[in-house]
Image (cartoon, rainbow over all chains, first blue to last red; front, side, top):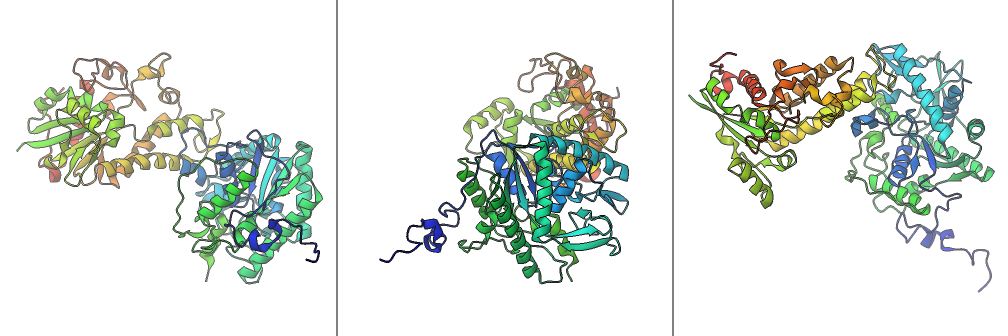
Length: 351
Length: 269
């Protein structure tokens, strides 16, 4: 037989046997961690709504997942989740874009002051930078400021404690304050506030901008924690809606592709940055019933479980079993997989 | 016409049970039957399709216990004109821990606790209550009319240091918003039960020393619901005087359309 550069390659290099053949989560050596997570590792989780699964799985695996704004004794679990307690390292809600994360850390360090940080609707007031964590808003603008001050202090504690950042990149599309560049996690007018085209502008971040944002973010955090390591993932959850002018399918592919390229460039740039292919695991054609629920957007709970199990197994960890999630595939909007996502609210604006 | 009343519940049925003579004297038109089980065992009991409240059919030990305590291992609630359930704490510990651990941002006082929004506090309260209300509604499915009172608040003795101390009641005793919290809790519990066709009977005001706390006099001499004469004095279970007061509150809530003319006490204190 003639020699070929492929002749000595392992099973993982070939589609047949690498993807076709094994089960969807039995892919040989799909993920080889660059560094180990141990039960003692202090992990900071953040990102788009898919990141909620990561934090939950790490907690069940007994890792030291940072939570500086936890649900204190007495707060029942559904309320805690709905109000953003115990979901991420602090109560910052979903962070969809790298720019949003950068901005948050700059604000924490006193380097940045967001424009129009308080949005109002029907006499209630929302923190425009994390509107989802108070679903009913607050009584006054002063309360929003008081709560945010408390939050930024808690965030600083979380950042100081962190050894590994697990960050799920979700979106490239964002709404910005035209004059200052302040980005918001939701479009104005979705949860609160009002869309004024003279004040807000749509932005679809590209690879270069996201790399610049991440580099600035990483630099700030490394100054606080010199040994900080990163695990990046890309959320597989499609866009609920796009303002790009493209079809939402094309816009989704563009967005995820950009984020995937960013992850690859960052992975190649630093040994302190790892990448976990949760996006690939969902998009893999190996799922016999498809990876998405009937809304074609929520990842089926058993797929989420399989992904997280694969992640933990690669680190030599196992998660405690969780109460069974619904498996009828009837996910409603963005929280059909149990994660709370603000962007699903955009569905209400459909024609 | 004599109407039949069932009082079913946890160990807290001791208070009205030992007030049975007084109740009979005050309400001669009512006959009252008591049936109780210790809290955890009570939670396993349920009403079958015929309206018989009983332990799980295969649980021989619990059935034996029920018979030993009550003379019968079950009670047919379909034969009664009204049922009063004396339940557990109905989500209150969660509410009190939340109140103790957070400062609700809408309230004027700050105790250097983490801030919690009022909607967050109310949502937590509702979730804690809903879980219990759903359980109770399931447990007494089909029983009408159904009244419910929660376990009595412990007495003020539990706020003191020592063996009787009970958290979270002790920590909330000095809460500047305790009265408001109690009003919110009572309203939320009443609403949750009404949505399930259950009438809530609040703890009588005359028995209250402070929000969430009963006057110590009602805790003295409380007897074990299983054994007459066995004094508890734990200040979590109440005595016959409390039971008589509670029954008066229940009797006031009995409406003519449910049991005939509303009964009135024959004696006055």
